[in-house]
Amino acid sequence: MSIDDVTPQQWSASHLKWLKDKNEMVNSPDHYTVGGIEAIDYLQAKSTPAEFAGYLRLNCLKYLSRAGHKGDVLEDYKKAAWYLNKLIEVTK
Image (cartoon, rainbow, N blue to C red; front, top):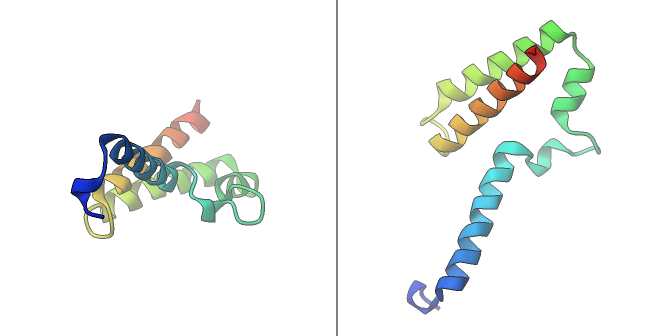
């Protein structure tokens, strides 16, 4: 089967699945919940508010610094934004 054999409906469904999979790699990758708890929740529970804020800030810097050097640049920007949004959330 070639790309020419795919209907618009099949293309749309495939594209939506790809977008969902890409979104999960930013918001909640499967490998972050091994052991039954989201890794970020465990880290927050085991650190002080200042330590956790520092962790979030440094992850923002990490993803911004490596963008374009490893994998998908847009995915790295989205991960940096996720950590920044989490930092804003815990700083309120």
